[in-house]
Image (cartoon, rainbow, N blue to C red; front, side):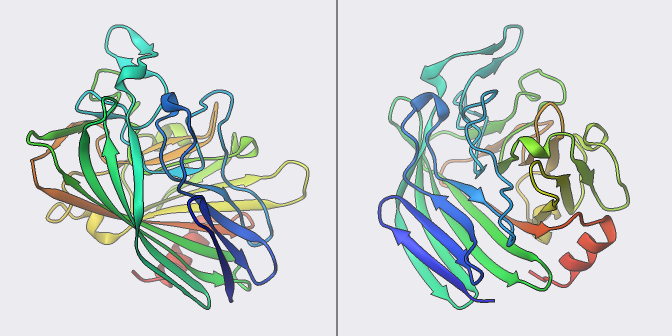
Length: 308
């Protein structure tokens, strides 16, 4: 299935399917509110039938914006946005700890029939203006399939420490709050995903039982408000993410269905890890956006047919 790509320079990139549905808008001119950790994000993200599957600036967490790369605890700074967790004191508004991710440009950009691929260069900047890390981000939109009612978004990151001291990656859990290991690539769902069904290989469990778990993929399904329709969003690791020989640190799922819907590929759920000066790490992720309520077998079969 063909796609159409439009680029508003300095603002965003939009992808529209052949049926006229805008399925992705990648915004690289960040929102200006410093407390929300300005950074590029993907929103809205839609199914081919036009169902929106991302939320934007919800009233409970204004810094949650669609699909975005985050780091909630990074050497004392917060690249997630919003309040900071401090052990013994809870969540505090500490604006001097909130950093940002600066868009520096695109080093590659290719739009073909049915596929968009671009490479974005970013710099992670701590609150005082010091440059802490360089990121190379690869985004690919592909496998837009009207018959399957699905399309795929690949999101890869390679991050290099440009400081002269190690970068320590953690989470609220590593800082002392139990089962709050959020950090890494994060999805916030819209309101009608609240209370949705969460699936993982070998189990149809509630989100609470899957919090902090490990698996190659996780799926979230819901029935929408207003329209008689369901949608499914699948979150999948590339094989090397789960290989202890190649991954800098093991990953766990941060997932909630209530009181609000969210999933994060947490790279530092239970333990911190350090990135030495001049060193890099990389992860690759896939998000599948589908119409309908997919069950576990359908998710598994689809992913098997979509090799890395």
